[in-house]
Length: 367
Image (cartoon, rainbow, N blue to C red; front, side):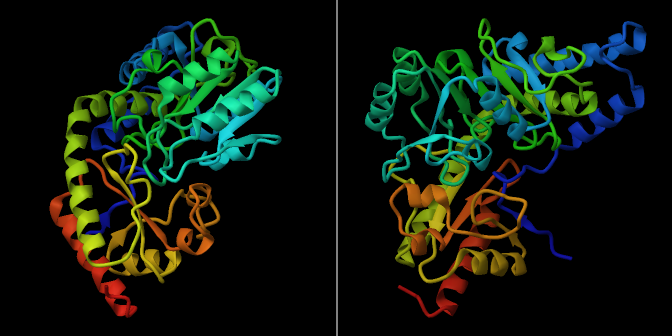
């Protein structure tokens, strides 16, 4: 059977072989990190080693890292932990933030960037202290937000800033402290680690009400016995991703070549191309062809892509990110996300482009 060409790294990255081996070794050792005997101390050391590895990639202090079951839990921790503040989010946030009740949206510009003037207006309009959540990089378009500038605006207004950095983590270099955010969400499976483990970075000195109470784990910030094997895998994946950061630059070249060929052969739109984007991400319109049909056809051709953010329903709907950027429902419902990763080759992209042209021409839409 022909090997599938995997171009959906923003949904999940294939787990690294070294990570699997590490996790098996940890599971075989066993031990509860809260126990004081040798087995417990060994498990505790594994968790703390991983904490240092994740902090090194994120540019934070190890003690600022709170391990969680994933990005969704971390985002919910933020909302719950600052429930006494009014919530302001960008119109392009992940559904785990959009699900929060009473949130106010900050507009996106056609470029996909946050409208900073609108953010200032929202902060000035209401004197109540705010929690602001803006993604570092969008999971659908790859657009990177100016978090340093946003942090200055939020802090000048007395607010707290959270950034969901799940898609940027391991793809571009950044430093939590230098960005100026107060909280940051990370996820393991986007960088070749296991699913079901992530982290929330809580700036040292900032107090947050815990979402999950229990035995006082994670310095009392997140109760429950730690997922030691998952955390160990997360740590190793972070260490390896840190060593590979420069390799992601080559993906920008592949992406630009791909987009150039597609634009030469269609009237499609490249969403977010006027802003700085993640080097691995392209969001493309195929005019006249619904996203769901595109995904199905590429799958039959042995190519894994997606219509945007992965969701449990398995259904494809018009992207709220693209409509927030000003595109109509029809255009947004014809979008496709291509996200590359460490194993993507030039041949993979050539094969994708040929399949894209074939589908476009088959629908009688050749430029």
